[in-house]
Length: 186
Figure 1 (cartoon, rainbow, N blue to C red):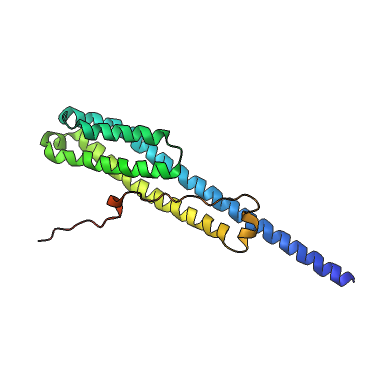
Figure 2 (figure 1 turned 135 degrees about the vertical axis):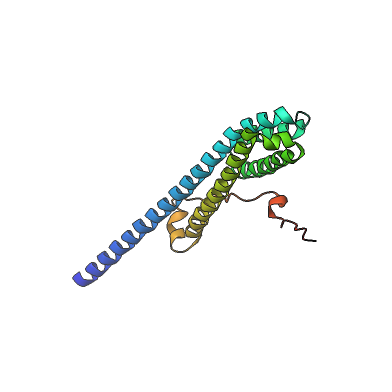
């Protein structure tokens, strides 16, 4: 009888230790997702700080390109006020596209293209876009890991009752980003 009690006690201890281990992994995964989102948010804030400088520089050369400048400014404001991840992803995708259009305006304005301030801002923006893409990939990897644990046995036995929720991916929303670029090699 004592042996049975010992076996049951050891079994319960092992189950308890496994539950603690799984819970700690879920917490670590959730914190990784939060940290990765914070990294994206920092990069987006850096982009948003750069936008007014870029708009002002372009405005000096391309006064009649108001629709593009207004679109960039409006998207920046909408993104700042957005609380939903999916809305923010859509707005940021549109902002990225508008910024690309804004940078393409430089081709029509040789003086703007030659402006040192514009070139510096363009370089900074290009580097920021690379950082944002890296941060998005890292965030989505963290989300994938967390969501996989929440959906997989044995973690799901703890995750759902303890209120762990799947996180949203920061996905490309516009078809323009998914489309393969056309290459004119004729």
